[in-house]
Length: 134
Length: 283
Image (tube, rainbow over all chains, first blue to last red; front, top):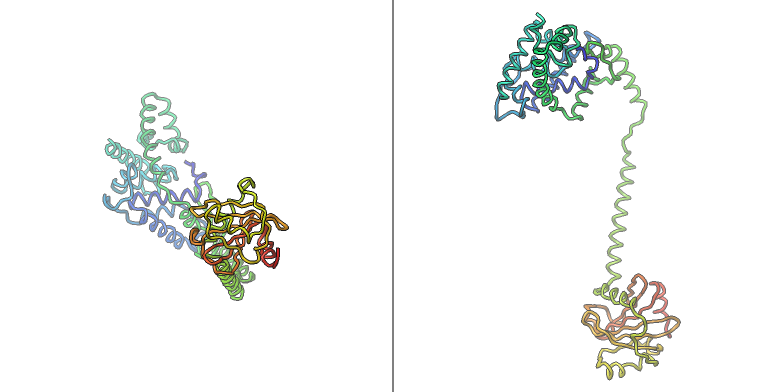
């Protein structure tokens, strides 16, 4: 994108929260995970670098274990619930794709994939969502 | 290769180097363009609902403040994002310098907590105000009597008088007992001694809330109305010989009890004027 120039720190905070909410399925857990993500990322970068890369925050967020879908526990509904029900790594990949905070190339690097693999993953995840929506 | 990236096409990504060519090709071809439109529409629906998930502003601000405190204590200014979306944070030495600066500023500023003396003063003022309010309420209660509100109603009813209601009777107040008894069968006529010689100009009897009230118009240095009625008929309890003063918007009344009769003298004026009036021995 890059479109990245227009992504403010607040936008990144909200995007990280959305990613973690889709991964955990619960608001409270997402907030706790966000706190953990920020704290850990800042501790890891402390004294070693003088620039904080938001990519680092997303990498930390993706390391926090997600949750399997539990209909009694989730706070989600509609398409966010459908996203939560996807399996990893498709779930995080397509969520990040829809959040539009990184270009596809940066996103593929973040997920440790080749861009073709990312495209395949997004296509498959979209198809699953379309089937769920039918 | 590029065709395999078709699933990554979104308006926000179409200008990225990796997708720009594919996007323009897809837009140019009818079939691809339709498929792209369909894909974008579907993605927009999902993305819209995803973006509706939002951390409330206060919490977002709290999390953002974590970013501005890389050492969890140092305050730093706003940071800027570079072209890759990276956020510049100050290096450790800069942060340390800022932290020292903040600590120095904090030491220089006097503590802004309220001093114990100020707190005691505020509590004291509050207590004094409460005591004054209690004294005022008790005093107000003591200066009142049961049925004072009925006297107020009676005084208010005097606003409607024109003077035509009265029958002309020019005599002294002490001479009217027979007139009221013979003409109206009224038995509860009683006038305090100090009002016995007051010059009357008119009399009447009327009903007020079921009570039979004798009313006299008299003239001294001002126009005065005298009322007499059985105390219990209007639920008035007042000590014999003691004067109570009731003030209305225009009228002021002096009330006292004589046996079972309530005597009320009223004129247009203030409480102080009534006090002075009642204190005058002869009229």
